Length: 239
Picture 1: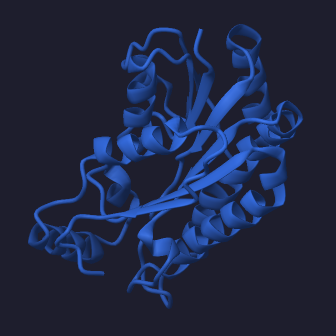
Picture 2: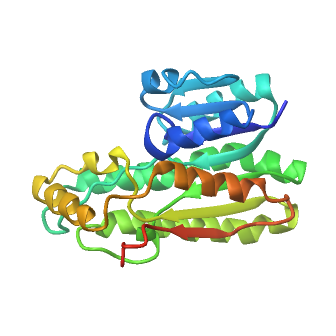
């Protein structure tokens, strides 16, 4: 049996596509997200799907340990759960800021905390964090979202360096605009309209499968090779 792949944010978009990609490759998978029904509808073979708040360390640990009892140790953790709540810094609610920081940063840390020690002990394993171009440069109405993604970049690179001698890989995947429901989290109708019109000028966002293929490519390198970061976007996306 191939090794266990754990994916957060697996109920839609990039996360669901990553889950299908690795299931098609014959890997057992653990799918984690708040919404259970969309994960079950994927009907993946050798797969578990659990409704979990990724900011809840105990819930994430319980889910991962349950899957590991069946499929063996986690060999790849893909932290894909995230929210994008765009807004103007002077009017956006603090609760939206807080929610983004919780999901986009704590949601990366919980699963990492659960699996990292075992990976170091085993002298193998990979953690891939799905970030964003917004973790490398800033955009209007993205201030706290950018901050959360800059944090993902910094955490990933610092942890990569720290555990490199243990043969454990940390990888950042930073896509530009992707065709996912992510924008639907935003509550400002004008921002949604402007963003949607701008996206038409670049002929829509990336297909989520392109991002999933980057994850697959990075993971399938020999354990001795770490593709530290992949940045990708539509060719017409200038920023």
